[in-house]
Length: 137
Image (tube, rainbow, N blue to C red):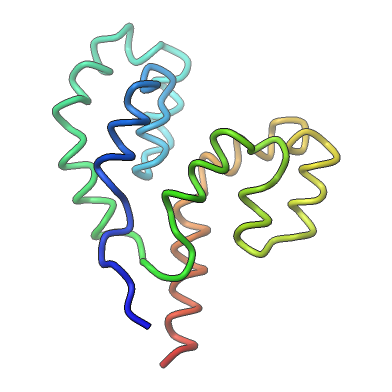
């Protein structure tokens, strides 16, 4: 089975950029430190958020080179995390049923688990895809 070589999408990046003053697009592109800074400073008081409008294409290229594509889709996982993270749906999508149910019962492990997943989602999916792709060989 052949997968798209692009792990991330500029369309998704720009959609998340709309909420970028909260760092959404930076987390999506695997930049959790600056995503957290954007979250607490409202996109560096809006200035960094505006600058990111022009940086998204380069962040997209970097993410596509860094993360492995495969059966688990980054865009779907990020949509699930962003809008249903406290219910653990993104974890269930990745096959992590036990932690997904724990998130469902504890509000995303009291939101700390959701924050953890914002920091590590790309690595979780990349590792899963790499393991799945190597099993196919």
